[in-house]
Amino acid sequence: MALNINNQVLSHQRLCLHSAKQTGLSLVEFVLGLVILAIVLVGVGIFFSSQHRQLDPVFQFRAVSLAEALTEQIWSVKYDDNNNPSVQERCGITPSVIGCINTSSLASTANIKDFTVVDDFNLWCGANAIDGQTLASDLGLPAPELYSRFNVETCVESPPALMPGYDEANPVLFVKKVRINIIIIQGGTLTFELHRYNIR
Image (cartoon, rainbow, N blue to C red; front, side, top):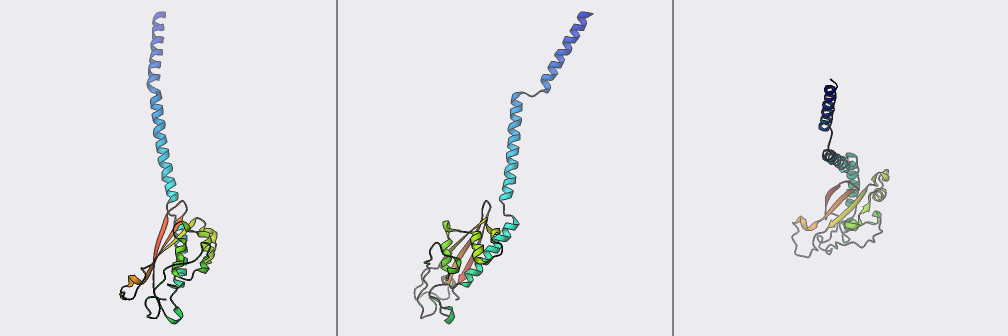
């Protein structure tokens, strides 16, 4: 009888050990589970970080406001140094006025209040982009600190130097293209293109 009980106890212990081995995790399964969990967490992290970098509507609105104020400033200056709006003389169009200059001589420290012609805005092209807060302050926008996460780049593409004999009916010869890039730091970029015609 005692032998039978011992055999039953041993059998029960073997059964428990065998079932414990089947329900437990091996080291390979555990590591594989950790790798899958890490991949999922990285994917979720990338998703949420990319959501932050997309253009937030508030930043889009501020970027458009900044570009609009800058566009008004570009419209307020002369097309070219050789233009004289007070007597309606335009470079390359009015017979007594020489061709357009298409250059700027402003120093890199110039303020927007010093800009007198469209070509002056080429000062902020490329690596010389201006800080959004500084520009907002110079433009007189309310709460310029709201624009601290912006950089603004303006590049002017001028038409070729005009010589007598050009086709006056071709408007491409009398337009300066101004590309305005509003760069949101750690975000996207909004690009605007303004065509400034030789009308003043």
